[in-house]
Length: 503
Image 1 (cartoon, rainbow, N blue to C red):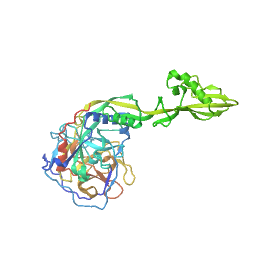
Image 2: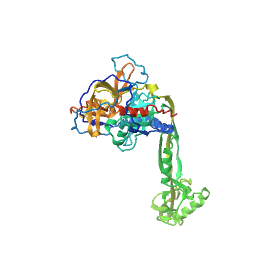
Image 3: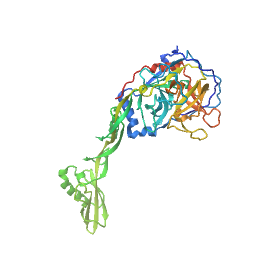
Image 4: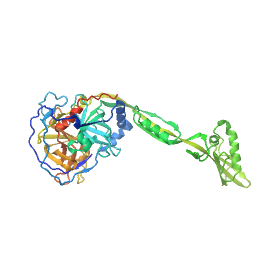
């Protein structure tokens, strides 16, 4: 989702030394929790959706860029403030403080893309990062990259995290979201100050093969019955990705009276009109008699079949084939005139389900944090400390310059400052100077005290929008909710929950 913001704010203070202390106020009632894929079978289907069809849904996904325009009139010198003591949670593998430093900017393995089906029913992505948790299974991103603020559906569908994603490659696997956590005020009121989310994920999976099975089913007497059967099959969480459709099916063994509901006239052969193979010869004689008795269209007395007769100038008398299954035309002569009879039958129409079912064979590759690590968390920090921002920016600046492709992980660096955006109820935001355009960069991680050699730091923000703050038609600012004790309360509700395997 792309948010272009008009910002107000002032710089404030320097970062105080972080103390490891939990905030006093983190009431469980302020946290909203919603299941994503709440069974391992459901999670298998989600993974199969993204791996299936040669990863077409991953490759064709676009940045989530639902536009939100904020009026440029609101400027404020206000900003966020800590609601309790500052604190930090160390990164995975960095529980014992490391003092090594590096001048190079090494990109973190923890950052990747979250993929989901948007409100427009198309595949999209945002940026996200792995964070510390008891079971090494937690992802942080913007709230509106998890919760559907467009159609007001609870959460976005088929949500997965892919660290290190690049053009269809999933180097450490796909991690299917199990349960999402955000602040009550964002879930209910879409409060920009609480536009963040933490998602527990299952163990990662990689494909070991794609079994394709043709699975026609039916026939069904009515289309409604076929649609019900198709819906039931698609709801079956034990299969992988499927491409199925309904087609009418002519029941050649069921000739019925013209006008019978669900029946239609079809061109038919002697064999089809006879229905019973043992009566083909007598049926052929009856057809010839019916044709010769008329020189125009006629319907047989039982009202289940008939013949269309046209005058012709060429052709040999007799049937067009010696094969009863192909005998559809009969030519005969009356006096000086020659006629061609074409036969039809009125048959019941049923419905069948056609298509292929993809069974994606998956293997478990372990926990997210064990594979790529997890960033620490910092909250209630004083504003003004420099942070690195890591994400996948895409899209254009207002002047049309397309600076970023969204294909590769990028970084920016700057000091945080207080900001407000009242139009999204953002009274306690922080900003950082960054040229990241909004598409794709939403959910980018803001890392405090980033250690280049270990590629670890403290998550202290997630991008929820961008701004052209000096109004020169170039994006120059990214904004995030201020990470305070309320955020720590949401994080605490998610950090100790086990997810488990899906295969």
